[in-house]
Length: 166
Length: 201
Image (tube, rainbow over all chains, first blue to last red):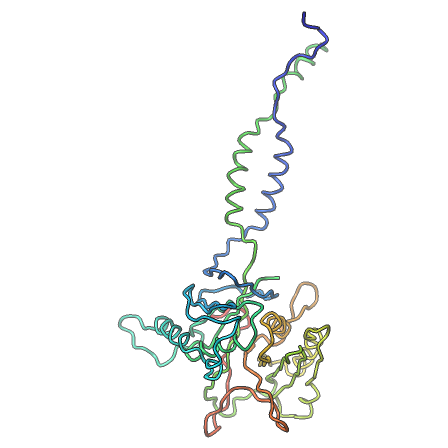
């Protein structure tokens, strides 16, 4: 005989309240930190960008990445580096010939006139093509300067150093 | 009456949280997938470019700052141009030894603010790092040159136009030089590419 003192069997229910609390907190955090900025920039592997307080926004341009082992343009390998250094001949010449050649092709593409337009000798002030440089924070300035010099020889005089907002 | 009240209490149903859970389960993966856990910014800069400048176009209330970053983090600040008062420009220059192995950015900003107060139209700074200076150190110095913390959250602009060049170590008895080659005649003065403080093309 079933004792009348035993509790009546009750269907178990899941306690959803703590789960909901957690979800609410996560959701609020994600909504607050959500940014709808569209970067046309693919961060290269093996590159740790320097940190900066700069607030200048990213704008579309040619992407050039330099890490300890290679220089790449728009994700395509251009030249290899050895522990962040180019061959000594490149430093002596003040340029990396492969990079100059590669960037010159991009420059021609960017300043190419539309059909029916005459090509100007140089882009108008403010319309100069720009390069976004992703340089590893461990890189030394000698190599960075060589890359910038090479870009300058291809026609790019303006750069944007990609950094992580601090 | 009391029994009726008890019955009413017993009949109160729990809120149906299933739709809320469904919503959360959809929203959270979406936000996680699209969240940016790092924010990329850029520092506009340029390299020197030699172009002809019309004669008599020099502003007297603007100077160009040259900042040499030595391999050990020491900073050497000098200024050229302005009203041509060499003594005043020399007094505004400075040699700042490294602090804790890093460049003395705070000291540099104080000097740059003094320069800016004296020549308010100044915007351009040449940065001349030594070969072995790291990119992170360079970026920290550029940050310090471009602006400094002002009152509250506002930033005070110092020299927003930064131009990267290379310091060539001086031969004994000579001053250091920038790696900019002048024209053979040496007649065309160097003019820097104008670069807006924020944004750009």
